[in-house]
Image (cartoon, rainbow, N blue to C red; front, side):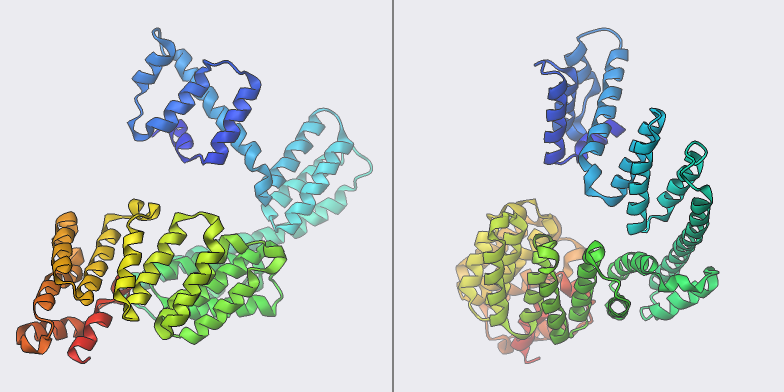
Length: 487
């Protein structure tokens, strides 16, 4: 797909609205070709037909005018996106100050130029953007030739000091790349307990001339962001717990947390919560969940709305293991707190988890009612067919436990028909077994009377299954079946 098509496809509602306001402010003609082309690009998506839109806009002739229109539209979108997002990211503000510096230098206004150059220096120091700081100091050295009030030696010295930091950042990137590569290799070959902290220290010694970079806040942040994601992707939650706890405690000890990196603190807590949960340390996970709740109120609720869902998710997943009633209470609280956010995924999360918790409280009919509501949810309609299939299998289990034989058999038949591809796929062997099992259980609930069925369930419950497989089940099949055969 061309760049212009890709750019228009990823623009959000705010960006589209801002762009159209900006275009109309320059010319309010009803037949603006750039707006017509923009609207067509947005609506057509993958079905974009260049010949169709060309003929609609120009009727006839060569395409040179059309190509110029596309080029101008691409430039206008790029410029407008830049304007809209300038104030939203620290690095963008740096570019803004440097742009203003260049504008006023070109107009022979050195005092104004210096004002913005000093603002750029201050922002670069605050954000530890050593690459941009090098450009700032180079600009001070150049302008000193025209302004006697600027001592070039001061900025030459600053630039040399900054070069040391810049070199550390480059070493950081090299170490990080090496650690990431080595960790990937160890995971690929199935070595789960890789001793991440030891691996990290050894790689620093090997690739970094300056051992002090491992004590750098910037280095620790970069490593954490990269390696935590890698450990999650490889489902290595033992190492993720060790590493997240170690990094979080180091940041606390060094007093590295502040408003500028508060989001990093929130993310570390979430990784600690999830990894301790995966490692079945539920009480410890809940302790860190409470810490997360307190941090959401920091800096005048700076990240409250953005991460509130993660707080309630932390409570629900843990209480689902140790206290079903508390889990339901957390869901009720989440529903009240997040109601005004109007996010269909939040409703989806609440309904699905409420259904499973109610089911294991033996409130089967209430559980089914929540799943019925779930089917009307907007997020559910957009959900992948594989996940919908697993939700439907969970409902079949609930229907089976409800004792309504006719509804159970009818629902199993519907699910097999609706999800024909999934129910016949080897990727869903466990779901296929459950759908085969339910009619037999419905016909004869006393499992001991059917020796063949009894053996099949024991074999299923006793089989070795990866945690990641069971994590993907809406209702854990073994948790449902094990009590039926006394396991």
